[in-house]
Length: 260
Length: 163
Image (cartoon, rainbow over the protein chains, first blue to last red):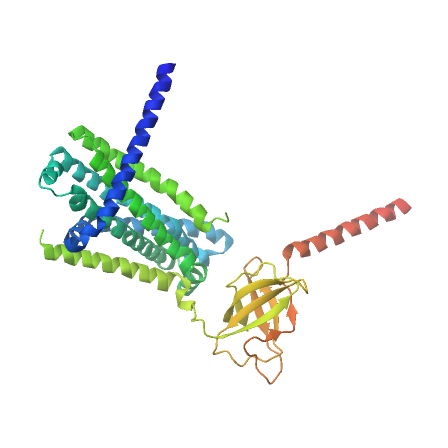
């Protein structure tokens, strides 16, 4: 019995310790951001690897999510003779929720896992220690550019996801099932507010970008430097990022759209 | 990989993201229908402004002329004061225009409908519309209908008792 309680306590302490180390790393990365100003090329290269290389999956998924929303929304709305409202359904769902959340989940799977594996392997092959030997802080040289690139890339990816999704919904609604084009756009424009919906969606995607990149970098930096440790860290990145994104999404939605 | 190609791709990526945001702002949201705050405001007092919201449309003859900018409660008259901003180009509305709160469709959103009067003078900034008609509240209508129905039922029962 006592052993059980001890195990729980040990696990709990471990969780808090990791959380504390994650926060310290976060503070160190934020403190190291100013060192990127003379070396902005590093950020550009990382933006290429986390942002540009994620474009294909984001565009394809966005297109299909928008098309499915259009089809499903049409099937439900046509019963009420309200198929002109399809534009509202597609745009609000994408801009408020699906754009930031699905883009963040895909980003965690595509870019977050790659970041963790890369940093974990750098640690396993002692590249990070080698840098410290040369008096180069790996936080400034390796982690900070990756973090900034992730934070820059994520809102752009979410915006691209939403825009492509709206286009997908438009193709289905106007091209496939024959909703009137003018009604589709005008109802959408009536219902979607720039500040309430689009700005809040962008804020969400920035928050998700910070959280997902932070988790990915921390897991990589904190990985046990063996091949098994790196593989575990990669798995944890995807799982923890997905949970954090979905949980935070609820909190953010309650703060932004709730009547609290 | 060649630095130049990487930089070009990142440039394309950032431009695509900005274009997507721009498209969301212009094509999807109501930014295009935001008017710069030019125009003039008029107010109207309503007995009941339930269902009306800030940014609800103000329309005459089915054309949107402006939006509701403020809804306040007047302590003296116990009425709702609705402030509306009308776009500057619609500056020939007669001074005795009347305002009513209508519902778009049976269950749609509320909007302020203006009916033109016959006055020669036009409305100016800060004017108050004298003739107003309150919003139709569906619950009240149903309530009236139900109570009328029940009363009829009661009176028919009374007749039965008398017999």
